[in-house]
Image (tube, rainbow, N blue to C red; front, side, top):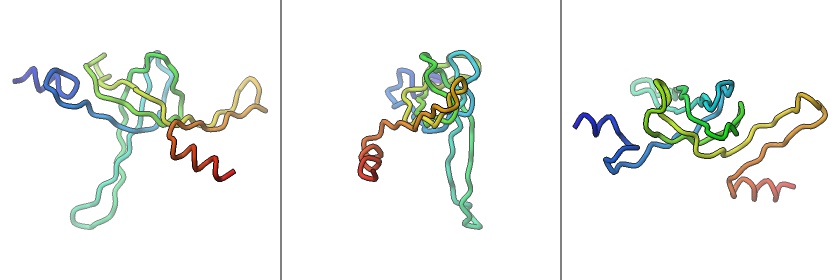
Length: 123
C-alpha cells in the first residue's frame, strides 16, 4: 500500500500522471529548469480571487527551455531529492534578444494551432 502511494501517478497504479502548465523562471542548472505554476482560488468567506504560485524543479533532458518560456511539465519518478517532474513540451517561447548581436530579436513562437491561426489573421 505504501509503495503504491509513493509511486503515485507515474507508478504502476494505473493513474494518469499529473500535468502542470507554467513559466520557466530559471534554467541555470544543468538539465534542470524551475517552473512557476500559478493557480487561482476563491476565498471561502470573503470571495476574493487569490493567486497562488509554486515553483517546481523539472528535468529538461535537451536543455531547450529558457527563462520566460511557457512549458508543460509531467509528474514522473523521483529523479533527485527535489525533482519529481519532467518537462514534456514548450508551448510558447519567450521573446529573446541575442546578446552577441543586439539588433536581432527573436519573436515568440507558439505550438498552439489556435494561437497561430489568430496571429495569421491579425496580419
